[in-house]
Image 1 (cartoon, rainbow, N blue to C red):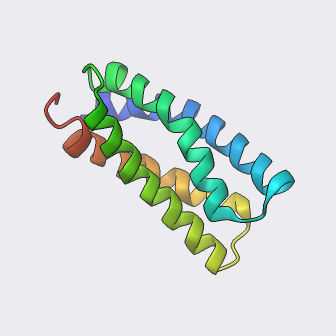
Image 2 (tube, rainbow, N blue to C red):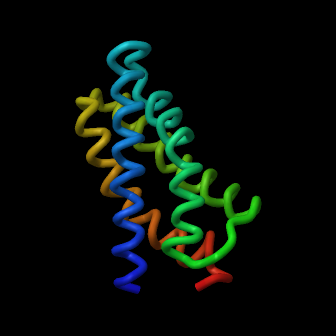
Length: 120
């Protein structure tokens, strides 16, 4: 499990850089709405992360059902963190840190035991 967590972390670093960049561009230049910015950034970064994790971390061929589970589960987390940040007027950088931490821990467990359950 440690090997999988480390691989998931490596993919997560790449995904986080993409996510953060898109989030910040949206919040700074387009709209201050963090829930929408976080969801859009997530949706853009998620496809690459899903494909790489399916092959590199969980050693399986990705399929549509897994992709839908992954996007719905992690997208919900993204939207909830953004919504809480909007409600509590959190600084956008804090939103990114909170989401990144939660998505790493929750995302790995969710991927291992639900999304890619048949492969592990």
